[in-house]
Length: 257
Length: 230
Figure 1: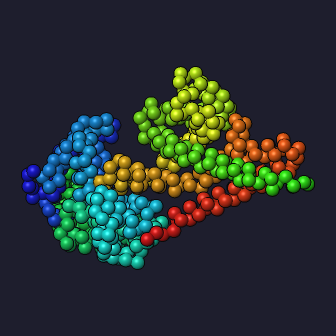
Figure 2 (figure 1 turned 180 degrees about the vertical axis):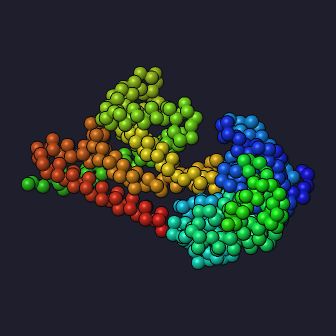
Figure 3 (figure 1 turned 135 degrees about the horizontal axis):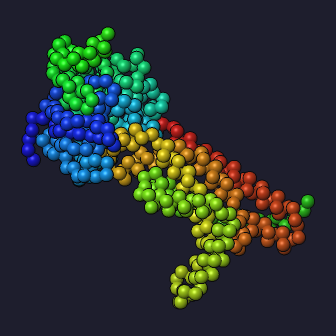
């Protein structure tokens, strides 16, 4: 296995839904500890890009590498599928995914949600995982909600629980798919605060977001996607302060106003 | 009203209740074992299996249980004796008895009705929760075992409980193939004592009692799920 300074690397990723090409030849690489924000108008393919990384969507072409290891793919009905299911499951266990709609398992308590992955997927003992799960939930401010069910919590609390669930797997890369888009405005802050703390501790993160100010503050690099292509990328100051492409400038200014 | 026959027949009714509950319990157990995959393949495919499952549900739900029971007991049951050597085999005591045929017929019935309910139940689980399970690295079987199935069952538990109570009240049909469950015992009492109404009333009371017990039992299960567990 080759060692790589990149935690995650995408090479010439393509994705079509039928005749519609959603991703056209997207390549990007995140160094370990790097925080990359993906921005762009809806339909630009940013969520699809994120979902292709852990094969929730099957890319049509391209390569995906995690810590220098290539994800083995083969042609299937809906595009490129995992050639080795175990490898794909191992990849997924190292990619912490946070969804727009939280997707907590409603039949489990918050604590059970967080413990499920480490116990079932990583095969660790419950006693071992329990302590860590409680600590994680305390860290995201849910120490009082261990035995609550998702339906009994606010959206912000659910999303923080979902972040704790992803963190419990001790992932190499965190993937955030519009984590605050489904939240009431007054609940956005508490979730961003948790994400910011993760960025500060040096986690590798890919963040699809509409929170431009937040993206500017936490990111090392920002990528602007348009029509399934990387239109522009750079440091937050570059991209927000002095965008080169017209489209990006229009997008950034429209969001800011 | 004359009730003097009751002490004499009480032990037989106890036996009858036991048979009724065995028939119900076994057919719910085996029926659900079939209903779960029958519901699942209709959602996941592959299409030949999905088609087969759908056809099965349609046939079972489209024909009276009484006819299924008779076809199985008088039809299937009458074929077995033609198999050479079967009367000497260890299976004969089972094949000779009516009870296993009743369990088989009721199992198919439960599978047909509940298979359809499970199809809807599997379909009704939010996709996002399944994606979250896959995204965390679960195998397809783990996704089913830990998230998909428990979520599906949780959604339709009250519906299933209602269906099982209906099944309880279909069990008297088994008396027509000489399975002496509660109603069967009742007919014996009527024939031997010439009392028409009292045994029927008594049988009805037993079914009410059993139904209440089941309702309480299912309610208990339902509430236990809803309570936070440590």
